[in-house]
Length: 354
Image 1 (cartoon, rainbow, N blue to C red):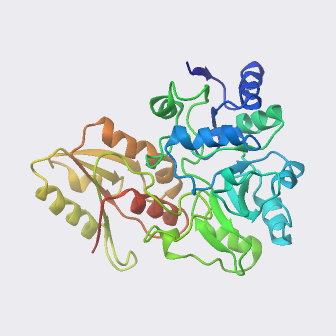
Image 2 (image 1 turned 30 degrees about the vertical axis):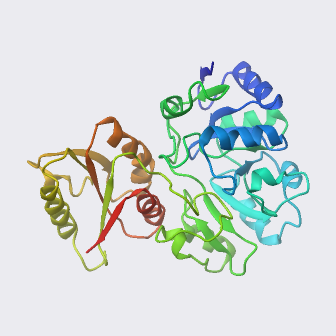
Image 3 (image 1 turned 60 degrees about the vertical axis):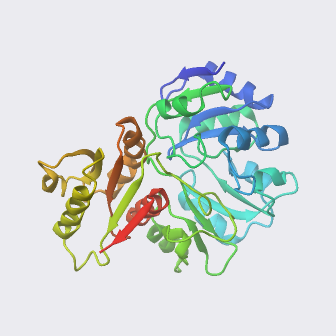
């Protein structure tokens, strides 16, 4: 039976954290909150525990896990030959939602890296996550705490719905802060390469290192990478069971939101035989008044942070509402808009560009 423990995100019950750490130490699995999404944690040095993570999630074995550390000393346990640019980024962005691709140490089992000689590492900024790593006295390998391919969990209730009875413990600390996963940068290439856009906008990272970052098509969600150097690069991701149609503008600087909305309306008319749900923003929802459709609000286009925070919960709501088809509006690829579009493109079953 899965233990469910609800805690204050800023002042977690120390007894709960100790109990969770004991489970990690003996090879069990614990779902815990980070500032991005909930993670499904295991001792990275315990091969059997790591393999169980893949089994529980239904995750392909060549899809690497992110290893979470709480100190530079712990970083040295999982990575080797760390380049100087890594320390420049670490000093500015850790703890926080930035994952770096580094050469792995000999201690890290290949089961955790998808068979690669590189490792994805970050230091989370959530008090519960940091306390759990410290109490466990080991780096924790933790992908998102959900069934593989489904929208990532941003609330304890999401984890309970997906993984109850499948893992040993769930620490529920309410909503996560960002609501989307960490940004993943491969700093072993020159210039560095974006592998997955996330909670830190690429523009901020470029300022920190003083050079542009390569953004491949797969990082925009437009194609699948040939090899998964990090999570989110291959395979189905973030998708609700409800079929999702994404409508994008080809040029957000020249085309109006009214043009986007009118194309959504035309599409609603094509699906009269189904229950239609629309992922809408504050700026466009009035266009849909009177339509035979359910509006699922995402927030305002003035705050991409708000939309990113709400996105996975909104995608999960589509299934809870029993939608027959869902339609999502696209966003400009600037700042967190790139992150939002990566998730929507990977989640959708059909993409329309106007």
